[in-house]
Image (cartoon, rainbow, N blue to C red; front, side, top):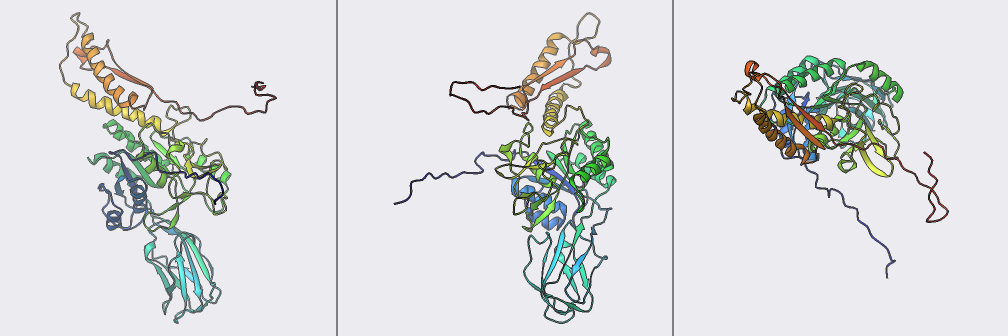
Length: 485
């Protein structure tokens, strides 16, 4: 006879959250191969790998496809900023010395670790090793060095480590980080132009590569040009990762200085880093938060706040070690980046996983566009208005007979009714905003100028960011608590 008990199974993935049918994430990044500045819709990781081989473009696209079922629109850029190597740390437990062959170039940002399992003499059979590209979190199968005097890492762009004559011990190890090739501001601008010119549909843009104030200006200018031409889009990008010896306070100060008074109402700039499970290799690489945040944003409708718990945690994302201690930026532990307008990740007490802290846009202080959803809802309103007003262009309309050239009020009311109905269906009926109104000018001389003004006003949803309350012990069930304000 079993012990009396209550069994509770907590189900996940029951909300039915799915990417909107028309959601397409555009991704601008570098890759090992493939056509430059040529957006091509892609729905399979295999096609990404076949076309672009490796690199940030492949990793970002594969994550979005696997984790959120998104269609991606990859755009490979040139890479004027070459991939490079960090400091080599080696303890080979013998007389041999290791050097990185700097004639090779890494294709991605990696944490290379090589561990020797069986020692011996370089150039003589017997030495075995394992390697890792993610800081030792995932190790390869055991490999034999044979008579070679170097180790080639094909998955890292054929990066080669040379081994000098001498011996290597059974516990020898070497490690070094790499940086990925990256675009410059002009190359980023060229990629944005390609996205503006393509007729391929896309919803949101992810830019992979360290953003600075110059690149932010180029990205913002490109998105504003799209807005002027009728394509309203927003982007999620990232600032550089923290240096190994950089404290959270130093990192915050450095980013604040680097970006200064720069701003963009169309770009969310992520800061900090995270360990993210690769959808290509199954390794756990250190990546910018944007790689996980952008697909989430593309997978939800415009009004959603990415910090809402219903839409997290971010799949395959880690900011704490196996013991639960923070080893990447956690805004709840190291606050400040959010106040500096950066989008960051966070943890919650008693909740597993990693979450968006706030979907901040890098808007100027005091801007209405504090969060990404405000911008996306306004973009939706702009799209609806443009779609409805374009057929009215060049259409003949009646004017008053008093010589003022003003539009007949009945005609204006009819146009307003049409626009308000469409806006109401797109925004209010679908709970993307509280109210929306379209108003056409009654005072403009449209007869002589051919021009008439209009305005749209959107009352957005409110997003609760603080709940205040009290908890107290009371003398009896009927006794009120003594609340102090």
